Length: 399
Picture 1 (cartoon, rainbow, N blue to C red):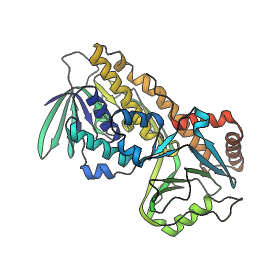
Picture 2: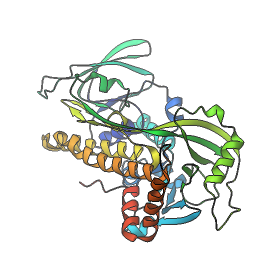
Picture 3: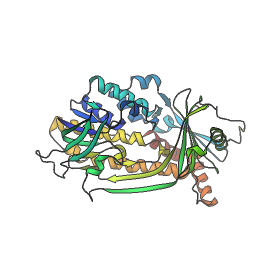
């Protein structure tokens, strides 16, 4: 079997790329090693930038998002017992974000792909990507070898796009020494829960406290998504539901409203998320491209992970469309440099949000006062608040 673009990984980036290519009249095949139920239930991000929403709408994947997604015009910062709201539209010329879980984005894109897109093969275990060279000559074609329905199969491609994560096959197929990876590991993690509890807040709350960071998010009007900073290596089983709720209330405490409490409900999911950053350069080698987590990971504090992955494949889809229309590989050749500029900006913002809001185990009282000073700066300076708002809502994708 042959296709123009072989996409390894059926998460949001691989599925969005397939949809954008389909709309541009470019054929592709998506290979996903997990089954459909697993992919559609995989809990990940929940915040969509303005540009991501605009592209999903234009791609025909915005109908349910419009109906069920929750637009947010700001976030609340809590620190030192005080509260400050950052107004996104006022600071960015009207941009906002949407609360719409990655699981729902994936469901929408899967349904579209199965209805009128190219092949989407679940439970397709990719073993190798062969024929990977620096050359882009016409005769050089990469080959994906995989197992599907208990049969060994091959897929020859004009191009391969790895949307299969940091530990995916695509990264491993590139020759040793081609890639350079920059990494940072943070000395804390997040304990995240899903709870059948209606949020008592209208927008996300980011809390800095001496007890550690906390985040109040949501998935719907009846489901809360909540996070606590915990030491790295924490076992979720060590935290009872009651202990989690008590700690959340303590970290969100307000001096002006000491009775403020979260609404409690049944905890339906509990997991620990490690905090780390990594960037791999370059994001392209010959006819093989890396996108999403295969090329970069950000700590979730800045809500950039899913949006960065979407930005990668938007740039890549435009480049493939340009190649089809003009015969020029100029945009494909620029893919890595184009994406990495945005990636490093997002890494910087995510690091800023993480180090400003979390309590490092080694941090001194002096460090804590610096954090509070920075938060005060955001609360009192329109320029500082605008910098946060512009990065959080997402920088424009450009042409």
